[in-house]
Length: 375
Image (spheres, rainbow, N blue to C red):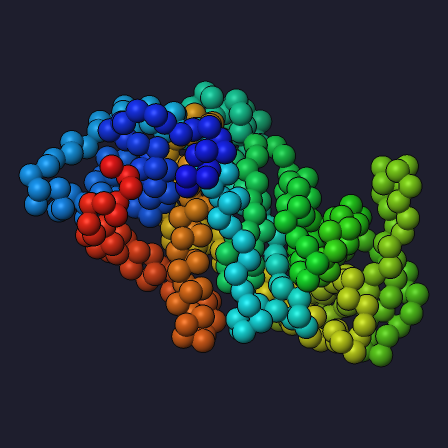
């Protein structure tokens, strides 16, 4: 926290009723007590400290709503963004069940949209979704694209953007956080030559589903039924000198309500012995762990009809990063507990852990006053 405040020059010299450290904690805690008013969240956040103050005859008046708003505006969005990128990183080890395949860390990328308050500024920056002629959507929407460690549900990187910017465009930016030793999975909506090329340039491997309209010539059929082919560059990439890339294609059928659904995957893992087609086909469906992560964010962590409270775009971005940090706090705790118990973090209840955290915050604060840096 101190590093983030220093890096963004948000540190303060004078004492305030709402010091910067406490405001940062408040923004994160907004996701832990999502249905509580801002003043209520602040009261929950300092509940344990209040008991210590009473013992020494001190009293701290909870600031009014406008003071809290001013404190959030003083902090801005950059502090939360910087803190997020300082804190997050992959945590799974080789011993974490289901987190690795053949020594490769399984990662997944996906996106979602969510309603934000219908203010003039939010509408101008984030925009409305399309609607039928003569009608207008009820709320502006923000888009969030996330990179998730599949074996732990930890969000490793995230990008926030206006609704009109598509997932495919923003997902390419998240490739900054993939590296050698990772296996990145994506759905057919994110497929592109550039996605394949840039993932390889980062040193990572990939396993992605293909749209129906994309065809692949068969160069060589492998012993497990998959085959080698190549993906051609798009026009823009071709002008920059890009050339075709060899891929391995895996086709299989799954019955959905009695109807056969054909899946086609492409991957950079060309060795059918080290990575058999059946293993990769089964492993691909771990990509849906990212949907579980989105569900944790939107349903279990917040659970509000309109997920975001803020009326101004800068505070919307600030709140979303606090939201992501709140999820990280819960999920990283779940990972630590699961590692100690030698079980998968995905076996633990996210909602149950969230309730434990809510109860623990005031208990943790029942320390010596010198140990509490916020006041």
